[in-house]
Length: 281
Image (cartoon, rainbow, N blue to C red):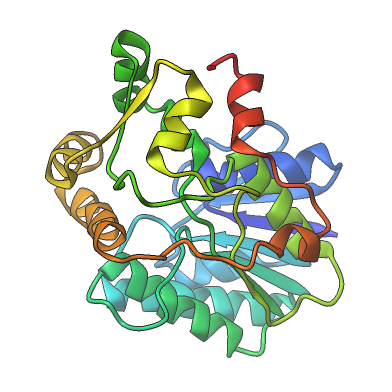
């Protein structure tokens, strides 16, 4: 088997690539830069270049796809069209699409959700054998300086999600394991799986997992957006902030059947174990 990881230079695609390399697979990493994990053969390119995407799929049997932080519907549609064309030309046996978010079941006006929802439906209807993974929020987000800094200095866990919202936080390592299983496990073609940690924690429960003296504060989404804009640019920040506003205003968004780990044949890591393993509690 030969694997293509689209988005291998990013946090999510990189986690998938590392997992596949660790399992002894040959991995080609498609990204705008050659900065891919060790053991991955870099294949620089842009999803907007149909010819280059087709070349990336040459000789590949399985492909993992994470789209870049681009939320223009026409641009994302072209990316998906190019991926489908490359996968068909290469005769890919299984493609796994990571939406990067849970997705509402209807149009929302939130570009991040709507473009990924359309992309997932297009891929599943393309004739390419495909599986869609829909993660919740990533535990690794909690390691970002804007979260870990106040946590270390003042015992405040600040995040732009209301305290009442229970989140089944997923680690990047578990995303890698889930994607590897979705790529290779029999009987999964055509499925959409809401993958997440085995326990959903509210804000106070999340804080308690870090220690008895840690308290949770909901971060203002506008303040979050302003901070993210300084790092990622205004357009990307606005798109991401839109998802957090939706989470804030929508009850039950992270409700899930909790059977993805069983379907994939993997053990998903409890967040408390992930925190303890990093000496953060």
